Structure formats: C-alpha cells, structure tokens
Image (cartoon, rainbow, N blue to C red; front, side, top):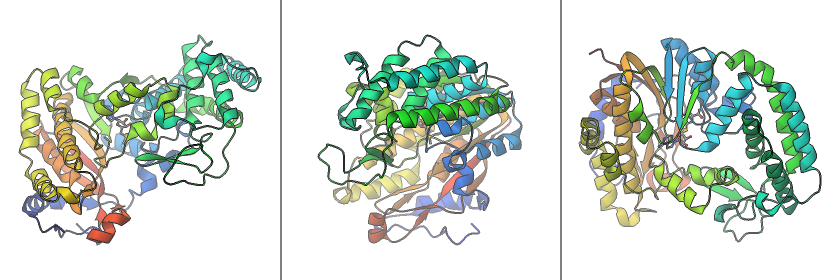
Length: 470
Ligand SMILES: C[S@@+](CC[C@H](N)C(=O)[O-])C[C@H]1O[C@@H](n2cnc3c(N)ncnc32)[C@H](O)[C@@H]1O
C-alpha cells in the first residue's frame, strides 16, 4: 500500500501466528489504496454540522452528506438501501434525488431524526409548525407544574442528569407534546426536545460511555467540567428556530420523494427484502470496537420511553459490538429456519481463519485481557456480519454495488483486519471487492494499548464491492 502511515508488516506482539492475516493481506494488497481526499471531515458527521436538517441531531456516527452524494454520483442507481441507516443520511439524500430509498435502523433515536427531516422536506405546513412551536415555548416557560405522568422517565443511568429547573421544563414540554395530534408536527417537536437533552444535561457522550459533569448529584469515579449548561427553554428555542430556517432549503434538497424508514434489526428485516431488489447499498455498520449506543444515547432513549428492560433488550438485538452481547447463532438459525443462506453465512464465518488466529491468541492470553468477553464480541460480530453480507449478496442485483465504511480494530495488540475479513465474506457471497479505499488518517490505538504494544495506526476504510453477473 503506497503510504507510510500504514505498515504492511503484520506482527503479533504476543508472539502468536500471523500467517492467516498475512495471506489475507497478500490477497487484497493491490486493492488497498490510500485516498487523500477521504479526510475525516469528508466522510463523517463533522461535515454535516451546519447543514439543514442534519444539524438537528448530533448523531456523531453518521456519514457526511458529501460522501453519500459522491458515492451515488459514482454509481447512478435507481434504488438505494442502507441496512444501518442511523439518522437516515443515505435514504434522505437518495430520496432527495428521486431514487427509491430505504433505511433500516434499530435505534429509534436516529429513525425519528430521519423521519422529521423527511417530513419537513415533504409537505410540511410551516404555519402549523410556527404556531405549535410558539405554544410549546410558552408552555415550557409557564411555571405551571406538569402532571406527574409527564415527568422525564429516568432509568438508572440517566438519574440526576438534569438540573431541577430543567426537569420541570422537560415535564412541561412532554405534557404539551402529548396534546399534539398532527403526526408530522409531533415528530418534529419530539425530535427538537430529544436533540437538546445532552446540551441541557450534566452528561457528555464519549465513545463507550456517558461522562458526567462535577455538578451532577451522583457518586462518580471521574468527572468532567462541561462548562456552561444551557437552560432547556433556551436550547429548545434555538433548535425550533433552526428547524424553521431549514424548512425551505430542505424542500429544495430532499422534497422530491419520501424515503422508507424501517425500524428494527437488519438481522431480521433483510430477509424480507426480495432478491435483486436494490441497485446499490451504502452503509456503515457498528464497528467492532465496544462502542455502546444504548449507553451514549441513554438520555434520548429514556425520553422515548425506553425502560430498564428495554435498554437490555435493545443492546442484545443490536449487532454484537459490546462485551455484553450474547451469541445470536441459535436465534439466527431459528429465524432463518436453517435455510441455505444461513448455512452459507455460518460456514463462511466458521472458516474465517484470520479471525480464528486472533481469537486463539486472545484465548491464550485471556487472563491478561481487560475483559475476556471481547472474544465473544469478536466471534459474534463476524458471525452476524457474515449473515448481513450474505443477505446483501442476495438483495443487490447483478452489477449492483455496495459501499461500506468501517474501521479496523485491535485487542491486546492484535490487529483484526475487519476490511479484509468482510471483503472475503463479500467475495464468497457473489461480489468482487474492487477497492478498499483507506482514509489518509487512521485510528490511533488507545494510550493504554500504545504503552504496552507500541504505536499502530489502524485503517479506516471505504470498501467497494460489485455484484458479479450470474
Ligand atoms: C455507524 S452507525 C451508521 C450511521 C449512518 N451511516 C448515518 O449516516 O447516520 C451504525 C448504526 O447501526 C445501527 N445498528 C446497530 N445494530 C443494528 C441492527 N441489528 N440493525 C439495524 N441497525 C443497527 C446503530 O444503531 C447505528 O445507528
């Protein structure tokens, strides 16, 4: 690979074997290309911060609008699917161009944002919105105590997240929203309130966890200084004004058609999609990096009424990316009624020797691992991704294209070439891996890992797979 930042030299700091990872690398070497234009801003949310609609919810895991536009321009499809659609970047942009567009997403937080933007762009009544927004602000400022049932429905990890005054204002907002009948206005108001919760709270999203400000009334091991915490009514007013400003540009940008948003797990919903149904897939699954969406989006999920058990259920239904995820093998066999597709997917994952190589080393060092369940995480992640990739091989028409964004990861100093393993699954599922574009700046390993295993930059990539003609 023509770039010095990423080493072609694969080694195991634990003295284990690297033969399988080397041979996979050899196979894909000519297709790994560093693309200097793929900066982080060009790929991820940072590029969307000020854009109409996308600025309504800080969904840090989302694509940049520019990336999706570039990929659609490259392929010129009639239909586009994103099976991990987050806040709906892919379906919104594709539908905005008049394409048939579908997003599947398991977390309602992103789905609500996508739906709110799509509805604002398609047949929105600005006058009804302005009047509801005015009444909402008046109600929040009214100083009347809201009825008990409208209090913020806290779960354990959100307790004491807001100053007392904010709790009262939130309850009044919830009380008002409960009276709105118009589903579009209700969705947008819900989104407006949900989207500001972090900014009015003592918390900050930080990778795997919520970090807490020193002013929160909680026993904490470490605390941050968050700076000014906005008052709910102030933050809400600003967001409602932003939404008003964005409606006209949104009609222009995304007003050509409504995307379809399916809420649920792709592990269940993809199998309901017909063979060859899509020309193109643009997607970014969760990374195998222990990031726990249910923790970072705890405030937003609680706002939506998720109780303690719902959090646990959602975490288990999500693609396995945390140490808490239990194996889904038997469940997948059941829902797929032992079909040929599931047998092929499980076979592909069972025969993935680069993963066995890493897992064997980690098993040998399990007593040194911070959490030995990372082994279960790795096995679960690749098994589930094998099912997803096999499904894409069925759903994407011959000649169609998949673009996938994902990061490589490392555990205990052992790098897992996620890009090569998933591209291997793709090639067994009817695709040809044409390119793996590598972002010029990779992901550094954590300071803890760096101290023990040396500095290593992990590839962040965009893969292009083209479905072979049959
Ligand atoms: C990297 S983010 C994708 C963000 C998206 N590209 C965007 O522009 O907003 C991965 C998404 O996958 C979702 N996810 C995790 N497990 C899922 C599953 N089993 N089915 C569908 N979505 C899932 C997560 O909630 C998260 O929003």
